[in-house]
Image (cartoon, rainbow, N blue to C red):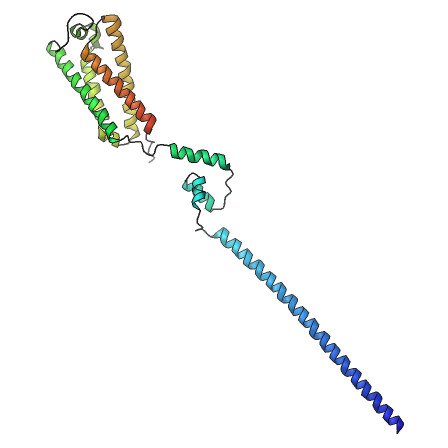
Amino acid sequence: MTASKSSRARQARARQAQAQRSQTSAASAASTANTRNGGAASGAARNGGAAAAGAGRTGAADKPGTLVKASTLVQAGGSPSRAVAARGGGVDRRGPRSTAREASAALEAPTTTTPPLWFQLVTWVLALAGLGVSIYLTIAHFTDKPLAGCSESGLVNCTKVTTSPQSYVFGIPVAVLGLAFYLAAVALMSPWAWRWARREIYLLRIASLVVGIGFVLYLLYAELFIIGSICLYCTSVHAITFILFGLTMFAVAAWGIPKRKRA
């Protein structure tokens, strides 16, 4: 009987020990599973963060409609091509000094090649005045009438000048050449010609005045050193030609010449 009691006690202790081992193993398994699940969740979170960051970078790089700040356009000189380069993600390696110089040059560049209306009218009125004097000189040349208000003796002697051999160039009266020059000048100096900003017209205006100035210099030399007299009407035409030349060169310097239009 004592042996059976001790046997039952050993069996009870064995069952308790087995139950404790079972509980311990179950707790260990649960802890391991939790640890594994936590690591998997952390890895998923890391993968998700990396995917989100990559998607953000890809979207920022591939998005074609990305806006450019105004400061970027100002530093780029306002050029659309440079703005496109900035939108494409290109790196501007010109440096701040280069961009500042280009922006300053863009601000200082003339915005239009057409002079103001007052300038157009001044040149046109001068050309009309020169045309009027040339018409009068041409009429006087072919009618052999003396020029009004001009003396016929001394340094100022219109008749001596207009009847001298130097009053013909290549067999053509100088008065007729002056008339043809100012007919062209009236057209080239008109407001319509100024507003019609064509490069060809600007170049023709400059070339005609250069030729006119050369011709005037020759006539002045002939009057002062060959004929020995001057003509007031001729001198007025010379002065108008000089003024028109100066104004035209000023217009070129101030407003420039239109660029050639590409087809």
